[in-house]
Length: 181
Length: 452
Image 1 (spheres, rainbow over the protein chains, first blue to last red):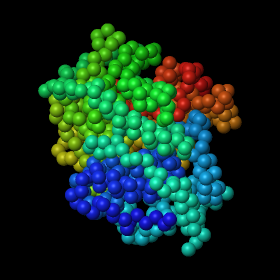
Image 2 (image 1 turned 30 degrees about the horizontal axis):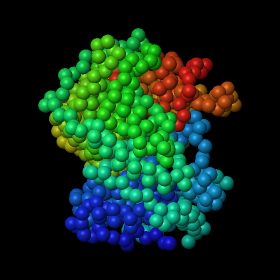
Image 3 (image 1 turned 180 degrees about the horizontal axis):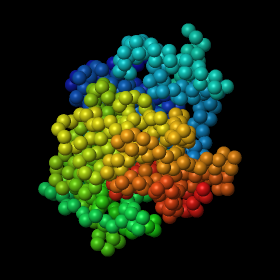
Image 4 (image 1 turned 60 degrees about the vertical axis):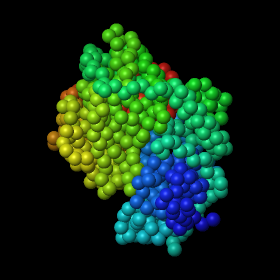
């Protein structure tokens, strides 16, 4: 199924809908799509679920302060991207410790490779080594199929920056894949 | 369309397809929209556990909420003024703070895993209850001098010269407590502080040297930008508090651990912008007595990336003259013409930004040896000449098992304090600085210092 989150609005249109009901309904409609997005970013289902839960909890908290509740989905997706970014940074720190302790075997990578195949696992591993912006640009462009304008809005950057970031990301990704061969 | 673009598209979809339709766990919303700040899971769960864990988590949260609400109700009356400031505790012969506070790391070993029969029974689920009883440890011996039991899940701790502090999550909000050692230093007194409860999740906390102020960072929602950092500085003796916010232009940044300077008005914190090389990524100093609420009005002191390498964050000596960080990541640097290996502890002059190497880790792949020092020191002396830090060592002789050493760096010489290594994997608070320690597998017994 082709993910296309930007077009979905759900019950958040109603300005006065009870926050809990509205956020819950939005979650029911889009949680799987957002978890998938986070899984692509993180490669870790539990972490992806946590990020999405946190994003919706934050949406619920700020519901009455949103400038436009019809923008709730964009808002929560930006939160998911931020959450993934934080998790990746934390993971980098953890991996540095793991290097010293050698107690964390790459179980997640091995499980993922078994599930999706070596080729895809290699691409995803390289993708997750990219800087935050480059990784996000590629996932938003080639997984969510967002336009440059939509990517710019999601990432809070200019359209020109999207183009250059995507280009640099592809170059870097290609280099990483070559290095890992 | 290039082959590479196709590969990205196919790989992303393959990963996404591992998430089945209708497989999202229930949404857990709490009053105020805050999820409890449980520590991140140390190990990935097996996929089949997820549905069970999600269901169990609902039970745990509901049970915990009910029981915690019963346990703490009626809520303690917030006093008009808090306790007077504590008398400073003594120092050890080495000049180290004589006591520090520890959150035991037992939540993973407490016996309750998702789906375990211990889940959802008892007053507080076992894996969380261990976070309610803290230990005050004597630095000179590593032995527990006293314990302190808090009325809820402890999410952050901090220390001043004379007292310890804990943020406790209960009822969906953080409340704040002072923990003071009694005269005989064999027991503690726990007092709730008059700081207004905060529903935002706390990230880091630091106590001013005299214990009169607590600074804590939170994550709050900001427009369409997602979570951004806020900083609160609250009096511990009355309900006065100030808040600083992240401006929209810096919404992609994040705060790291922080500590107070000896003047009791300047707060130091590391800030990471969109990337470590962003202009804003640096150690910053905030004058908490100056007007305004712009967090980024703070002064940048030292970039996270320098010629000496890249660090995740810095700490600064209380006199404000020495900045300490641990080199890491792929960006290796050079000091005095010599390459700086990852894991080295760096010291910089805050005035001139001149780097020096405080500690060079032992790295000898041929012997199966390697070492790595933690990002944030446990403690820095006022002058910055002494630094206490935890490092991880792995030697072939240990059967690839890593051990923790707590190292006192003074005058370029490491002194190992093996009796403190038992705190590896735990969160500790030394007076004057907050240290976050996290490693997947703490050692089972103290180990002798590696030879150099």
